View (spheres, rainbow, N blue to C red):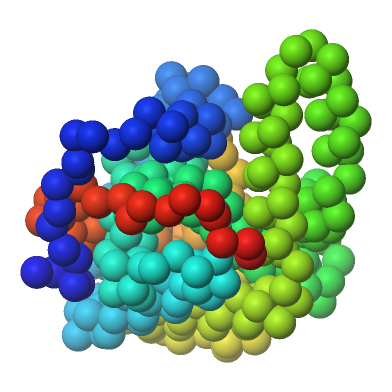
Length: 352
């Protein structure tokens, strides 16, 4: 048994009503494929990775000088970061009274990392987490809402860190359009939380749906809005989630700094943190598959602004990519050793 994941079979007599309740939300996540066509995203990923590899290939002797004893410690920090993210998710799961232990959530988080790596979608792992949790509890709306909000809080923390760091940088160090994009992402995230919490525009939308005889869809929208509003209506829980997001990001930054020290001469933490924070924001731009090439190019660019050579930055980026694949490997093992989740019968959702 890995990470406490039990193996259960999916019952054949699952009711059609439960399946109908799950499909609209889960199918919506599954259909998402990002803002760019898959072919273009593959071209961008291959092109950017080729660029980074070419930089490293010119000075491939850099790998001979890497202090490999620090890499396992760096990977341990990234694993701990994933554990913190899973605990962040568990706060919403407990708030919704979903009977899922933390060890199960941790395993599912790693499975999500596996699918984020192998699927051509920015939210493939989130869809898998939502499906697994819904199957386990029989409550698709609560399960999916917890995944969406957990993901959103993590992204907002990353964007806010980038915004704060951008404000303390000297003028003209980073291109202004990118800084404006970082600030826009932060404002959009905050605005999104407020809008979802207040439920603005839901009634007009439902009015239109009902006018076109789409009452069932309107009922589903109402249900989703009530669940999202309930999850977002606990400032204390959101505050804890934000603190955990900061901690998770700090652990990942610490891992990256260890890899930097293993590859090249250390730089001042005050110079490292703003650049790696902005590089992390750049990874969120959905123009590639699993940020392949984007992450590496961002490391080369932003660490270069902190006086790290292009070849060294490329080696750091490649090692961090391998550590990410290590996460995916753990998730793949969990996925292969667990069976389908047996739904827990639930007559009515527990109010959030």
